[in-house]
Image 1 (cartoon, rainbow, N blue to C red):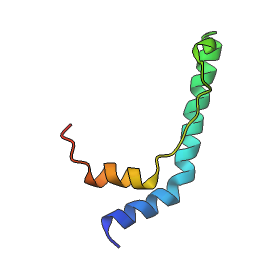
Image 2: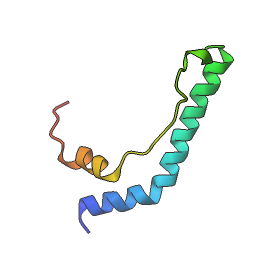
Image 3: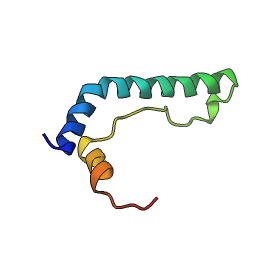
Image 4: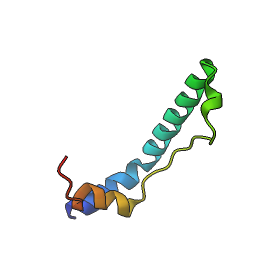
Length: 67
């Protein structure tokens, strides 16, 4: 198994964790804004999503950015 295949397997294994984390962050933001009565600034309901695996692989392994 090569490095990319190992990465894909690990991502798929941990996918539910990442999804839960995104939902936790989304809910925290909504609650914090509501507590400060700033929730009206949200014109679109916040949501979370997981990156598509092909896009994730491209950025993790093949993108040549010099940050």
